[in-house]
Length: 462
Image 1 (cartoon, rainbow, N blue to C red):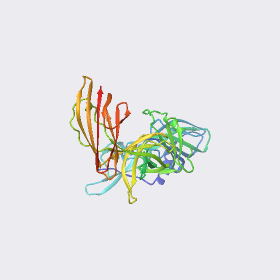
Image 2 (image 1 turned 90 degrees about the vertical axis):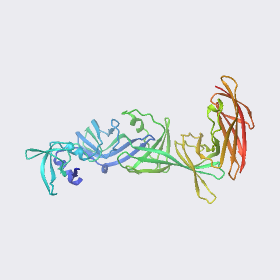
Image 3 (image 1 turned 120 degrees about the horizontal axis):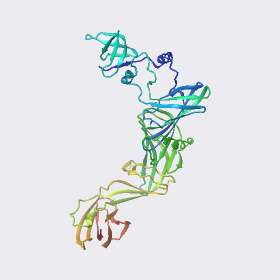
Image 4 (image 1 turned 60 degrees about the vertical axis):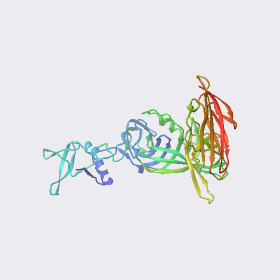
C-alpha cells in the first residue's frame, strides 16, 4: 500500500523547527533581492541569486531554499562582505516519502493501521528500519508492515521541502546584509529562431530574430535579468571554475533594446526587460530589431556521386532541384546560429510558408545559405551518353541533363558536378564556373512550360 504523508502547514512547522533547537538561517524566495541569468545555447546557465539575510556574529548555518534542481555541484560560490564560508553543499533531492522515512530513523511518529474491516487505528511508534517494508517499535515490540499513513511531528534536521543550498559560515558582525549565491545549472538553454519574409522580387529578406528560452532546471525564475550567450563554450565535466569567467559577463540590462557585447569569441546579448521563466516553460523574446538583408534565390541540382565519372552508370532517377536562398548579413550585427523559417506573400496578401533551415553562425558581412526544399515544377533527368577509360588512372565520361519546367515563369537552374579528383571539362554546350577545387557549375535558364538540355564531357584522374 502506498504511503501518504500528512503535514501541518508551513506556518505551523516553523515553531516546531524552532522548538527542536535548529539555529539555521533559512532564506526563502521571499528573501530574494535580485536574480540574474546568463544562458548559453548548450543547456547551461549561470544563476546569480541575491538574498537579504539577518546574520548573527560568529559561526552559523545558512540555508538558501529554491535553488535549481539541476544545480551543478562544485560550482557554487556564496559571497557577501564580512563572511567566510567554511563548508557548503547542495541538497537537490527535495522531499519525498522514501527520503523522509529514511531520515526519520529512531524518531517517533504516529502510524495509522487499517484492519480487514476498514477500521483505522493509530499509535505512536519509533522507526527502526526504512525500506519498502518499514519496521516500527511499538510498546516494546517490533512491527514490520506498511501503514495507511505516517504522521511526522516535524521535518528531520537538515531536510528541506525544496532543493536548497547549505553553507556553514562565519560573520564578522551581526546585522542585515545582501548575499549573492552564484552557481551553474543544467536545464536552462536558449536558441535563436528567425522569421523571414521574402520580398516579391526575391532579392530581399525581412528578418526578425527571437530568442526561445527553455527552463527545465527544476525551479522558477521570477523577474530575472537575462543575458543570452551566442557561441560554443568549452566545458569540462565537474569543473569548479566556469562560473568565474561567466560572472564577469553579467552586465546591467539596457533600457530599451537588447545590448550586444563581443566577449572573447562569443557574443553576449542583454535583454532590456526582466523576464519571468517558470519551470517547464518555453518563452520567446525579441533579441534583435527587424532588418532587411540581401537575398538571392536559386535552384540547385545536386551533383552526381563521384563514381559516376569513373565507371559506366545506369541513368539515375529524375531529380527536383533544391530551392536555395543565399543571404548576405547586412544587418551590421552577427547572426547567432538558429532556425530560419521563410515566408512569402501570395497574390491575396496571405503569407505562404516556403520552408526552413538551420542558419550557421554568420558574422556581420558574412554569407549564408538556406535550403528550403525541392522545386516541384522543375525536373532533371541525367543520362550518361559516353564513357571511356583512357588509362588505369584516367577516365572520361559524357553526361546529358534534360531540364523540364512545368511552371508559369522561366527558371534558372544551377547544375553542379563534383569530380573528387583532378578534372578537366573537355566539351560543353554552356560555359561552366569553377565553384571549388573539385566542383563545376553550369547556370541554365529553363523556359516556362518548356525544356532545356545541358551537355558536358569531363576527364577525371584519381
